[in-house]
Image (cartoon, rainbow, N blue to C red; front, top):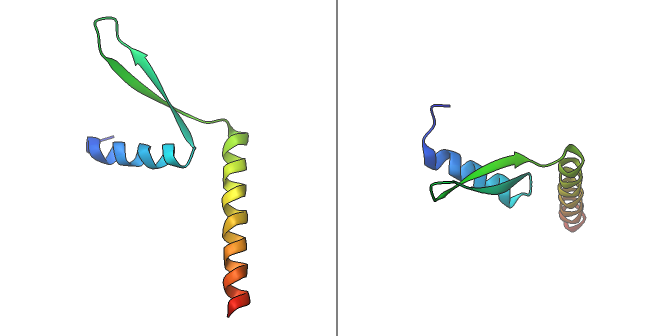
Length: 67
């Protein structure tokens, strides 16, 4: 991808925090481990997006009513 490792780590961290990807640890035969990242199922992502939109809508509605 030609990107710095820290850039990738920061992006993956954000996706993990949002629940859009999951991290799987794979142990190596000679010792150590690597992490694999997988996108969650489509329905799970849709649910997260819908929840975020609903929360955003409620907060905007609350701000408009205070105005």
